[in-house]
Every structure is written in C-alpha cells, then in structure tokens.
Length: 357
Ligand code: NAD
Image 1 (cartoon, protein in one colour):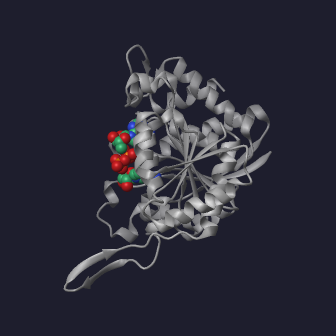
Image 2 (tube, helix red, strand yellow):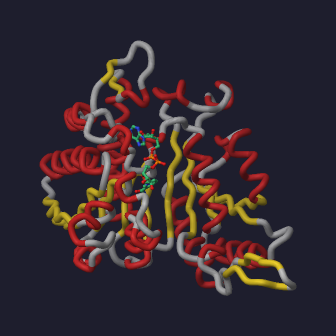
C-alpha cells in the first residue's frame, strides 16, 4: 500500500520522540512492502517562531491532503507568556477543529512488564487493565452556547451550556460500538442522567444505536460511579463511551492509574478525512534534548494510526508486539526504570523496537 503521513513534530521532546516513531514506520514499510510518504508541517511553538502563529494555513492544507496526521507534542515555557489565543496549544485545538475530529480514542493498558508502576493495589492490578475511553471531542459544555460571565442582581455569574444533539450522540455511539466489535464487545456508556437532561438524551440515543449492535453488551454508569469503578476494578471495562467533559476527566484518570505517562497513545477521528494520532503526554520541556524521553507512547500512536487510520491491522499488531518484546527484554527509559532492568535512552528505545519488529 502507498500512504501519505503528515508529520507534526512540535516542540520540546516532540522532534526526538516522533523521529523514533518514523523509524519504526519505515521499518514496518520495508518489511511489509508498503510505501509511506512523509511530509513535515509546523505546529505549536516552532510554528510561532517561524511564522508568528501556532497553526499556519499550510499546515492545515498539508494535514487535509494526507491519509493520516502523526503529531508529537506542543508547548513550552518560551511561549507561556503569550496571549491565550496565540499560544502553541491553540494549534492543537485548531487542527482538531479543522479536521472535524469528533471522537477521541484513548486506550489505557497496563503492560504486565510495567505492573510495578501501576498506582493501584497489586491485587487489583493483577486483574489487568485494558480499556479504551471513547470521548466525544467537539460538543458538550466546552462549546455550548450561551456562555459567559455577566452581572445579575448586582453580582457576577458565570455560565456555560451543556448541549448535545441527537446526531452528535449517535455518531460517537457508533464509534464506540464499532470499536467494541474489534475488542471484547462491551460498551459502558457514562453520563449523569439522574440529574442532567443532556445525559437523558445521551442515554436514550446510545440505547437506540445499540439496536444495530446486539452482539455488543451495553451497560450504563453515572459518571461519579464510573470514576470510582475505574480505581476499584478497571478490569470490568472494555470500551467506555462518554461526552466531552466527563471523558476529559475519566480518560486522564484511566491513563494515570497505569502509572506510565510515556506509554499512552491516542487517536482522534472524524467521519471522513485523516485521523490524528499522538501520545497523550505533553512536550516535557524539562527533559527535551537529553535523549531520555520515552518514545513508546509515540510509537504506540503509530500502531493506532496503522490500525484505525490506514487500515493496516497486522502491521499495528507488529508494532505492539515489538514494544512488548522490548519491555520483556528489560529495556527501560528512565521514566519507567525499575530494578534489574537496563536503562536506555530515547533513540536506543526506538532502535530496540525496530530490531524486534
Ligand atoms: P508533560 O506531559 O509535558 O510532562 C509532565 C511530566 O511527565 C514531566 O515531568 C515530563 O518530563 C514527563 N514526561 C512527559 N512525557 C514523557 C515521556 N515521553 N518520557 C518521559 N517523561 C515524560 O506535561 P506538562 O509538563 O504539564 O506540560 C509541558 C508542556 O506541554 C506545556 O507547554 C503544556 O501546555 C504542553 N502540553 C502539550 C500537550 C500536547 O501537545 N498534546 C499535552 C499536554 C501538555
């Protein structure tokens, strides 16, 4: 197959971790007879430095013209004093919007080799953790109108609007059920329908979409209970589908309990056009340029890109297997270092994964 991939290296550790992901993709292409055409575009602080804005028009055009977008991370102290609309992180929001990415998929997997890093009690961790949060990304209280701060009866009030249309709920529910079909066929829909009308509509629509997916098991949880269940027994979950604000919080919770920020990939998908694949962590300016960053989240994001964005599931498996082998062989970057393991740097980790493909 021949595919084009737009590279957004970004800032901080971005260029060094993305480089390892690119090497892995090139190795996969060589072994499987594919051709990947890579093109670079600017985003974040590096784009601000070069052309004064975090998301140049050329970047949007390059992303739209590609089959998938592969992003590292943006941001850093150098740009922290800029006005909010000029900051590197605006580039991220902008590209998600420009590509119409309404579904954010975040797997949280506890690799047995890294069980020691898990924040949960060992008997809970032993039951395993392999779930994916499907979060709606473009609606909800973050975007609903009206919103603002105004004076009412002599004092200021702040207000936002939680809002979902039937169609927005339907399309994210479809993503969740389709995702479950490729996994353990369980979807848990998370909302707050005991209090919120938006959530009542959410639940109604998810139940309606479920009629087309009868071989997937559907359950429902209120968000407060879901937050508890995630730490009490995450092994009960396969796919969690939820709205933007609940998903924001739950996906962070789900990933942090694995204990390894440098290990977690993500995918953002729209209804058509290229998806965006990136690690969940930021640009880690504190360790940039030292060749000690963990590139595995970025490499695992490449696996998500192959599986979800480019229709190459076997190649995705290849990468995930190679990452597992690398960990099993006791190779660790400093952030996941443990007794008895061999400490290596970012580039050696990328090389080690390539060798195990
Ligand atoms: P961060 O995720 O960059 O770093 C948090 C901590 O985790 C740091 O100690 C860092 O060294 C460590 N860390 C992160 N990724 C790592 C990796 N791959 N290997 C080893 N250690 C790793 O979060 P932060 O410090 O809050 O933010 C730094 C900058 O990144 C800020 O400018 C922020 O706005 C930006 N940011 C960007 C994104 C993104 O691009 N998607 C996401 C979050 C934060």
